Image (cartoon, rainbow over all chains, first blue to last red; front, side, top):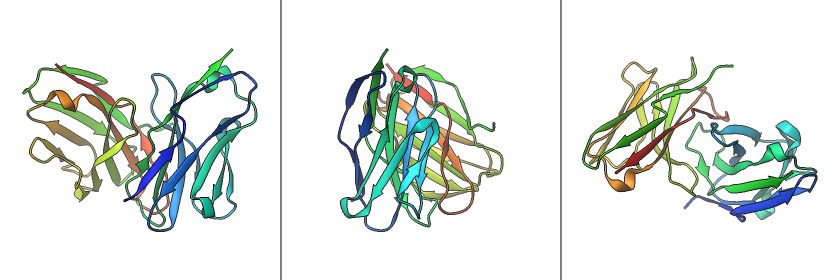
Length: 114
Length: 114
């Protein structure tokens, strides 16, 4: 069955610390990969996406993610977090070539201390 | 910037009552999704529409849930009768009618069944 695993439920960092959130997927086929962010009281917003090509993907607000096919991973990184990055982060996957259903991980709550 | 509109934002209903949620996708988006997000979990698909047709409703509890998109634009999700376990955030999302595209999410309706 298709699934997405996010390794950390809650991450607490101080401002300027580096961030890496883990995401592994299990999916029978070639996939599209996404990271969405949900700021407090707001809707899910796309941070970045990978469809094909360069496995290192740059997103908004200084975030990036690297697709490692051999590890079925798509980890999210940011070199220096800010208090405004406090949010919940969701990794998601769907089948390449489809408009199909996104399979989401359980999410990682990031708290950044000023 | 175009947004997916959902109403109401919050709904409290008593067990066994009927409840309905409304979604208006981004103009031109042919594909519409309803997801349910239980606290502490990622969103899970309930139903997917392509224009007015249901593409996937395999996870929709059809004994109590129904969804329609009569004119292929806005959509309604109904629960009758509501149960305590239906308390969750109900999210609507939409995408363009082409493969390998991102989903845009509304702010959701938070349902509390008492």
